[in-house]
Image 1 (tube, rainbow, N blue to C red):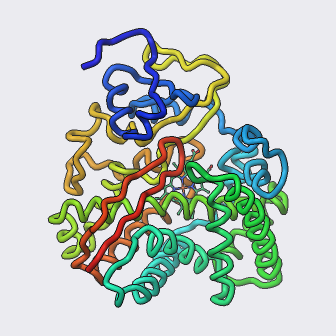
Image 2 (tube, rainbow, N blue to C red; image 1 turned 120 degrees about the vertical axis):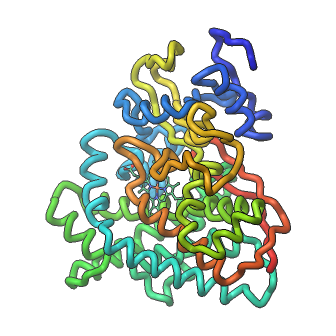
Length: 399
Ligand code: HEM
């Protein structure tokens, strides 16, 4: 074990790019926090991440992230300016209210069937090929198609909707290029315009679908503006696609690397729930959440200084040796599985759609296991990203 020292360890960019899990493990053994060479302080241990996600001295970033990249207006900027994810206090509470009410259990049940339909269509499309790159062929498409179903996007609009969402999301991915960012801005504007048109049609009718319900709650509540109504939907789309994508690849790869566990899921679909849970612990779709400290904060005798970018690292916390036995082993039968864990964040911003996310990962897994039980992994994906959204390298599978 590294000798305990009063100096907060620094993780170099090379080390974290090479293997973020190992870098966090090295530091977590002796320190509750570490600084990143590129800037920011990471909180590493489960108890601290859990406690600090409810600490009001750590604030959501509002418009600091686009402003840091020189973006001070436009469609992408508006997502940060008017969205719940980046808001604090009363603004956050009123923006989240209608969405959290609208995501009732009926919506989750309907969403499960949207996911199943989308999964069947995708598998029909590639089954005869005998091989697919799981990330681009399944995991990237399934969440967008499922959300398009939930939002009632007509079939004729789905290809353009899918392309626009994918281009917009590029902004939130690790290592996006300048050209991709410029495309993302245009795509974000098209997505917002499209949703505005769809909502205008909804207001005229009284249907019993998710969007009509969301609008009814928002209209009755009267605390959010027209632009805020749209932007919460945009954030739902971003949250509902980017965090699911890497998680879908991870759970399939983790199970296929542990063949007996894959076969167990194929035989018993009820095991999809612990499999999803364990995979989100082992390789979460979101590495951590980003906050700004407004005060000096004590973490087990070390100080998080005021005015810093702070990463509450679920990726590190979910492998904390203090909480999990054999944390670096993937085991869907482990006795210390935590059903509602930090992969979905904590405190006021805890994933507003956790039930949708779990439903999607479970259905996406079960349809794959039912249709392609002989699935075999040909290329093992590597997961990148240690701050927010994670991304997987290619994962070729055959059957
Ligand atoms: C694998 C599945 C998912 C994971 C791991 C995940 C993870 C997270 C995390 C960690 C947060 C907290 C962010 C923060 O505190 O800064 C969050 C918030 C959020 N998620 Fe998810 N999520 C998932 C699925 C979804 C889905 C399916 C949707 C929408 C359909 C969604 C929409 C959102 C939204 C809108 C927020 C913002 C909530 C707020 O700020 O109050 N997520 N998610």
